[in-house]
Each structure stands twice: as structure tokens, then as C-alpha cells.
Amino acid sequence: MDPLPAAAFAASQQTAAPLLDTHPNPRHYGAPWVLVGVRSQTLRRYDGWGLLQREYQVSTARNGVGEVSGSYQTPRGWHRVCERIGAGVEANTIIFRRKVTPWKYTSELHAQYPNKDWILTRILWLCGEEPGKNQGGEVDSYNRAIYIHGAGDHVPWGTPSSLGCVRMKNPDVIELFDTTDNGIDVLIDENA
Image 1 (cartoon, one colour):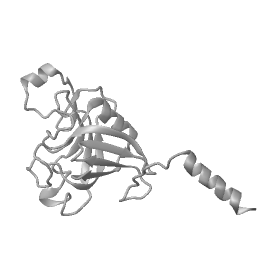
Image 2 (cartoon, helix red, strand yellow; image 1 turned 90 degrees about the vertical axis):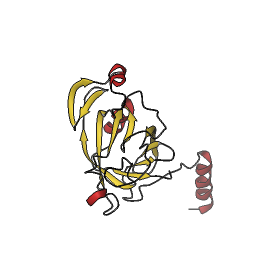
Image 3 (cartoon, rainbow, N blue to C red; image 1 turned 90 degrees about the horizontal axis):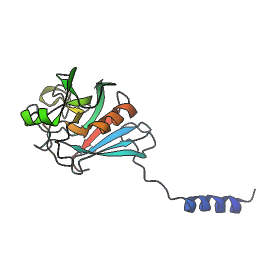
Image 4 (cartoon, rainbow, N blue to C red; image 1 turned 180 degrees about the horizontal axis):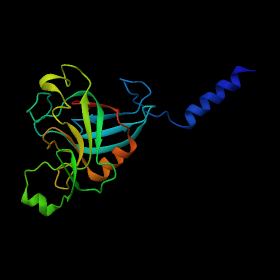
């Protein structure tokens, strides 16, 4: 077989469609993953090839980044989703102390309790994966109850305003919940 036609075919295929930008999982190559960008206030979901599947606007902690318990900051580094709460419940369902309630969030309810950090619709509870940084002792993300969770319409999306968690619009957190599995890697990067 003449290599020239094969090379010409390969070259024509590369120019026929642009190469796609990929971001493979740096922790577990070939596995889907999630990147939370604190600077950009976005959450990006990648497939196993590293192709961007979806980007969402989020809100991380108003106190910035940090790992210490009681700081009300968003912890950095590698995490994984270790528990999921709220499968199948309606949007705006209030989740209180990790229990699904029969109550619904409304703007009127928020007006009565304007300082409440409402946890709504779904929880993806994060476990830190880096001992001494976000796992164990006073820096344990799981013990700090750091979640990716739904929040009310009052949230200023794209602006840090939470008490440490990653807040998402309710339709977005439902989609994220339904398109990821328990154990998915999550990187919280303050510079992304």
C-alpha cells in the first residue's frame, strides 16, 4: 500500500474538522470529572475523554477559599462525591440537616428569613481526598458538610455568596445529579 494516499487522507480529516479541546481527568485518567472554578464562578462537567459536557454558573463562599472548620470558606483541592441526597424530589424542595422535607422554598419564605442559606433540591456531599489539606482533623470537607447543592433564585449567581458550599441553580443541580455517579472526582480550583 502506498503511504502517500493514506497520509493525504489523514491530513484531510484533520483539516475537515478542528481538533476538540480536551481536559482529561488529571487524577484518574479516563474517568469523568468535575471542575469548580472559584475565580470564574463556574462548574464544568467533563466526560471520560476530557470533553466539556456542560458549564454552569455557581456561587462559592463569600469568605473566599480555605479549609479550616468554621471558616465558612470553600475548600480547595481534590474531592469526590461520597453521598447524594434528594434523588427524584421536586425543584425547590427544602433539605434540612440532610433530610428531605415536605416544605418548598418560595421568595416569600426567603423574605421572612433573608440570611438563611437554603439547601434545596439535591445535595452532592463532598469528601476531601487530600489528607491534611481537605481530609482529616480541622480541615475535613465531609465533616464540614461541604456540598454542591441547589439554592434559591435570590442567589447572585457568578458572585461568591455562600457559607462554604458550591451553590447551583435548581435545574442545573438536578442535571448534574442525574448525569454523574457517586464517587466522581471534583477539583475545586481557586484560579480556574
